[in-house]
Image (spheres, helix red, strand yellow):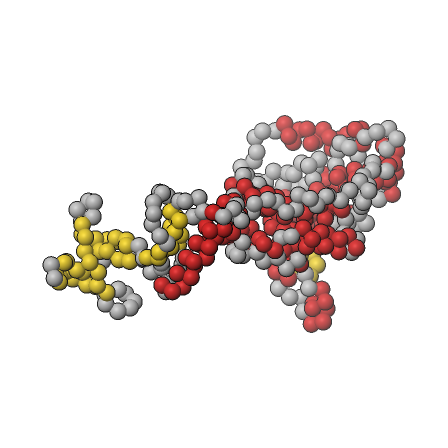
Length: 381
C-alpha cells in the first residue's frame, strides 16, 4: 500500500499464462496474437508477450473486478470484489469508500473497519478456521470433536449464523434455559468455554474488536456436583479383584448372541455370521463363562494331543487350567477372608502349589518345540 492521490476505481487485473498447447500464432496490426480452442468452450484469442525467461506467454484479464480506493488512514488499498459485472463492482466500491469516510470522520475506528468485512461471513467458515488453529496447536482429535460438537450445538439452538449475532443476551438466555432443564453446571461451563475460546481467537485474528462473552460468569460446579467421588466398599473391592483374576479366562467362554435378537426371533432363522456377536461379560455370568472356557480349552488340548501323537488324557482339566494364587497374598488382611469366601461361593477350583511350580518351569524353558504346539501356561490362562 502506498500513499498517493488515486481515486476509487474498479478494473480487471492482467495476468500472464503459458502459451496453450497447439495455439496458432498470427499478427494483427503489428501485434502478435495466439488463437486456440480449449477442451470446453469456444475458440479464444489473446495477446502474446515475452516472459522473464524469454518464452512467449499469453496476456489475459482476470474474470472478476478489483476495487482500488483510499482507506480512512489515507492508504490506497486493493480489494477483490468477486463481481464479474462492472456495476456490481462499483456498488461494492461505494460501500468501501463510505466506510473510509466514517473512519476519517472518527465515527468508526480503524479496528472496527477492519473487522466489518468478517461480520457478514458465515460463522461456520470462521469456526472451521478456528478448528484448524486448534489442531495446529497439537490438540487431540477427541478434544477437537468435543469442542466442535458443543460450540455448534450452542450456535444451532441460539440461531447464530454470523459473528454479529453473538450478543451476550442470546448466550445468557441459552444457559438459563439449560439450567431450567437441569443441565449440570459443569456441562454448561464446557459449552460456554468452547464458544468463549472461539471468540478470543476471533479477537486475536481481528475478526472481532472485543470478546462479547467475557462478562458471562461461570456456574459454580461445587454447588451443583452430580457425581460425588468416594472410596470403594469392601464388597466392591472383592468383586473387582475377582473380575480382574478371572476375566482373561472368562473372555474365551462368552456365548454368541445375535445382534438383531428381535429380527431373528421373528423370522426363526439363525442368520449370517456378521449378525452375531459375543455376549457382554457380567459379574453374574462370570462363573458360567469360566466353566465354558475351561471346557473349550480342554477340548482344544485333547485335539492337539491326538494330532501330535501324545497321550495326556489322564491329567484332569482343572489341574492343567488352574490359576496360581497371585491376588490373595497381595490384598489387605480384612479383604482376604472375603475373597476366599467368594471363591468358595462361586465353586471355583482351589489353588495349589503344584500349578505354580509347573508355571515356573514353563516360563523357564526357552526352547520351544518346532513340530508341535507348546502347552499353554496354566497360570496365564
